[in-house]
Length: 292
Image (tube, rainbow, N blue to C red):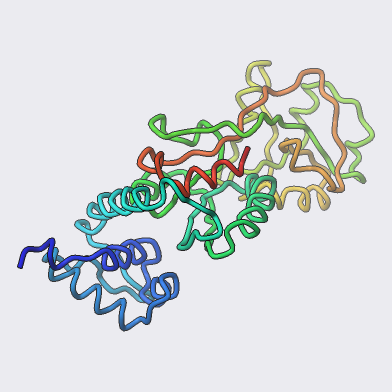
């Protein structure tokens, strides 16, 4: 019997789930199988491919190098097979499985709440995993199929990826309503001297995207706190006499005031992106359409 004859679609779906979850019980739950059934399928896969595929760790599995390479082909094969079956009759209410979205802190606040609401309403059987955006690991995770969609900014996305622009955004300078700075009408040079809090979720440091803009005026900011996400910055502003530059849509409803500036930072795009092999996936196309 050939290797192809010993392989079936369910085994490949188990392999895909194990790659994503790196845990047998979670993979079983995702597929609606018992953990024993997942183990049996894994045993057959190991025999077919003559590789351990996954090595045990404390809380699950770690894929072998061969498995990581194999995952790319398996993911593409399952997408093509799914496209073959559902190209003409895809309907969200019948969609099942798990869809993984990596999103920046900003996108999780501003974009995902409404997107998740639409998905839950139209595709109630589709499960979602929302991951923090990991800039240094993005390509590796999307190449291996562990992430289906990324919602972020253009500078974070490889040029080879398919990108759709969602909208334009811009930063505004804000401070707490009870800060002494709230009463001032400062020059740009004075703004640069104010104690500043930045959000640096990808690489913890004291440099943000606004620093280059200030440098065009020959100014350097006085950054005193670097936070891991945008959402926590208003709380820090509330306890310090300081300023921050935050995306305009992220400050609605917050207890902050905007400081008017002589000049304004350049606007920037907010985008959604995905690996090219998902271009023809009906589920991917439908979900991206919800972002319009």
